[in-house]
Length: 142
Image (tube, rainbow, N blue to C red; front, side):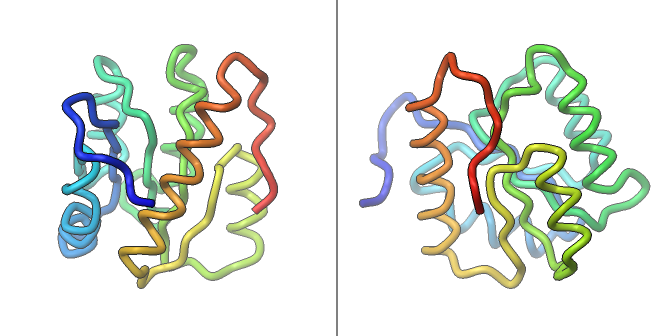
């Protein structure tokens, strides 16, 4: 079941340096979520100074600040550290997956992605986040 089209829709911050990927993400999600798309980690961190999205989609390979650096900075923001993060990346490398898990991601999706798969996985992460509100975030198996 897809998320409903409600007035208080959840907000997703998509961070990727490729405009075409941000467009694909927005096209896949805009009927169900409010999507904020930014093309650098620095812009994402500026956005997070004043806003708290419900979920973050994050690429690894970005310049000048990569996804790992961006995620470390997000995790150091006291009132933003609990935002669920899904890595959405073209990096198909065991070490990248291990590092992402160490940094507390909730899922790891390889590009290119299927829109329905992305929606389903976001819904699963958001659903499990709501169920675990108030409990320590230790992540869940991928």
